[in-house]
Image (cartoon, one colour):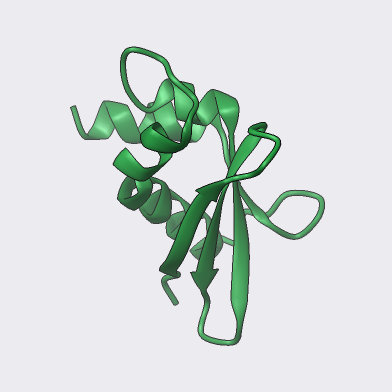
Length: 92
């Protein structure tokens, strides 16, 4: 079942982005690491503006990873720079 985006934001520390997504049975917290924010577009930037500019792309990546049950050690989906580069190569 695909995830549905509810909200996206940078953490107050600025060290990562987060997406709050509905998985049908509750909410799933998705982590967007800084390297993913930098890798999704040029010039590299890791801030709230970049997260909001590409929130739909990050949501799509997260939903695909969730469907594949590709979770990190804490049981969450984490979007990495490799994920962002893969998405970018398919959509450029």
